[in-house]
Length: 548
Image (tube, rainbow, N blue to C red; front, side):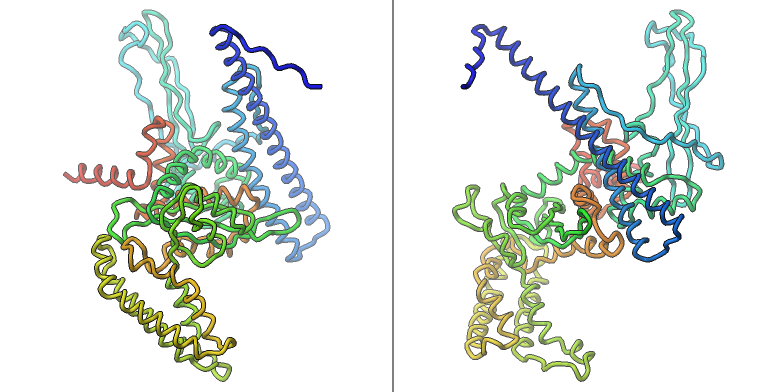
């Protein structure tokens, strides 16, 4: 038996009161859930930390020095690193949720006491200017009472220093009010690291593929004691601070007329093993057809390669997608798609590579006696595809109309000849012929190779996406795997920021440092000023003004 619904109020004031009560209850429930998540993340990090300590003690007691044990410790340290970062993110989310309520108490993680900065580090005093008159009564009779010093650890290339920001206190002789400038802003709550140091930690981890345990060891050799837990705390807070900027880049990329898409494998640590996850990239680069929109790269992480992932990533995209022949994209090309079908455009570099492997004379010579016969059909296919690439090199950077005109005049006849030649050669080949596979690869998808003839925006290759994934392919050798699914998501988000900065020809380290120093002072509607291309324009204008 179901209970009768609660009667609704009949007057406007009661309705408003009910809405406000429901809203307060919802915020309270969200705060409770956020606090529970923060407690859970903190507990997981603590358990991982204790397990790591136990394993290290066992190694010391029993003297085990096997390579397998060493790798196990490295895996546990990387897993702990991701858990520490996740715990910090959840703690900040819980604090923000609790601040919107009056009944839920915020959650604060227990952290080891911060050690004082080494005495040998030079101190740089920055004294914040005080007002010339009392802000309360306007009197000029101010006398100094003392000062508060906030120490911020900052890094200069090849040199460490501690910045002492001095906040002098003054009292007014007229009204006896005490005046003191506000405390300096730190990027991270309870932070002690300056923006340049934070930018270096982030860039080393996500741009140079140096895990935090290796960074900690390097800093220790330089006389600075920064534990992995401390570094992970800073990374978690910074990724939370930079999330709005990532959202702006995501919106910019997905608003493109054409995208390059690709993915690569990334091992992700799971319970007792690693699973083969994937990093997906979508690159917006309109420069080949003279577009004025700045380039940007967007990354996502997933546990597998199911087609639901690109479907979710590109759910609102309706332009041109340049990618390989992965079947997971096929649902996006369906004309019955609610948002409209995406136009596919395949990569000639992929197709050429399949022929080139059968026609690589230099590689065949290195094989010696084991070398197989060079396929004359593959060699001719490479020659014909290369003729198309030669035309493309001449029109790179031209307008859409200019590229289309040249392609209609020069490339269209070559494409028609290539199709006829491939079909003729295929009809003479047996099913087991090695060159039959790359020929079938092109002919079965010919309608997806041909769009560049009718659209000047389409590129001949998907190399932009492959270049964007090169860092992950190289990084796998350094960090072996992502410590968790959230760690993979975090790496994808930070790669979005760093790769976008690189595409706009700016130093990611300098850009991140300036963003971290300024992001808290900018209101939400001005956050776009920190996007890499806007930042580059601002810096160029500032340098030009100084030169003048």
